[in-house]
Amino acid sequence: MKKNSIFVVQPSLPPLKELIPYLEQVWENKMLSNGGPFHQQLEDELCRYLDVPYISLVSNGTMGLITALQALDIKGEVITTPYSYVATSQSLMWNKIKPVFVDIDPITLNLDPKKIEAAITPETSAIMPVHVYGKPCDVDAIDILAKKHDLKVIYDAAHAFGVRCHCGSLLKHGDLSILSFHATKVFNTFEGGAIACKDIKIKQKIDQIKNFGITSETNVEHVGINGKMSEFNSVLGLLQLKYIEDNIKKRKVINNHYRNELKKIKGIRCHAYSKVEFDNYSYFPIFVDDKYTLTRDQLYKKLKDNGINGRRYFYPLITDFPIFKNKSIKQEFNLPIAKETSDRVICLPIYSEMELKTVEKVLDLIKH
Ligand code: T4K
Image (tube, rainbow, N blue to C red; front, side, top):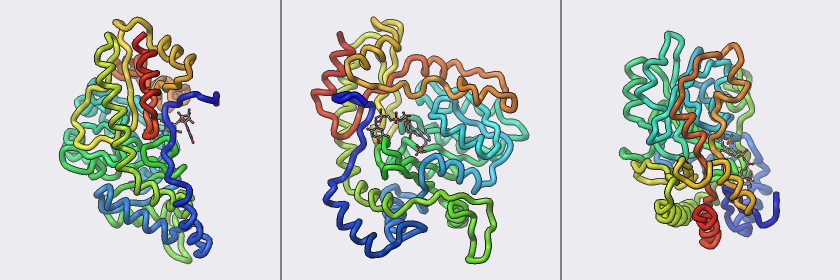
């Protein structure tokens, strides 16, 4: 990492001095993992903050996706998006499920519900959409499709911490929603994640699966895994929660400034989707059109050469990685919108402590 470089994100951290009293309690309790008191407290507080009935904490978002698929016994084929981080599809592969890729909607940049039905086969057992950049999928249309075809819906909500749509918490949609608390996310516990669910029986099964499938002191009923969150990460989560609203507010200021200035630049488009009741401003993607003076990659390089490390989330498309082109999942990909989006995107730096002068520097580089 070059000194003075600006990255696509800088993690938000609570004041270090606030961590010490919590750690003293952890030292006192000697409960470091396997569902200690802070783990329980964080689950309770997140249920309240996110307005969901149940939360199961996990060691990271990917583990959450893998565990969720196990908990719902998903097999065969799952319809998903190629425009995401590779973890979405990898969680399917880990469960020996075939990802079936469907194109995205040009406005939401999420799985296009109008194209899902044509991809359903007798082998389809679920849909795994992603709320990319924290912008909601067309959850109502997906709900209707899932009911009609008796499919489960597992939302990859890695980017969508705290997001609310027209009917409240976005995490209430589908059977399960998975959050990532990775360092690069709006809400981080260094590493971590959570599964939000509505059914106590499913929560219990998730909690068993993430703890080696253990159901009692003398019984193991599921092929489980170690996907638990530690007390240290849980403590961090409790502290981060105190600052989340403030951090999101600061991101909003940066988001609005970017938007106001970028709309003046020919050939630069911002994310068009505005149907978010409460946004978390987790990413700031721009799309570089032919009318701009540089290509996407030239602009990406120009920014990088000047110390601004944007990221091309999500380029290449998942379907372009060799692991998704092997025999067992070979299929004809017809993904023009995803391809076009992936070829034009750059995510600009956005984080709560980002200084206005840094925002101005980014804008100046794009303007001139
Ligand atoms: N589903 C979706 C839709 C996801 O986007 C992700 C993860 C997942 C599922 C899986 O969730 P987890 O299992 O990760 O909980 C990053 C993250 O590693 C990944 O969590 C995230 N999505 C993805 C979109 O971005 P990279 O390879 O771009 O990360 P990296 O290390 O290049 O970090 C980006 C920049 O952030 C760095 O240039 C510097 C800065 N940074 C990073 C870290 C880790 C820091 O300043 N401090 C740090 O500690 O994947």
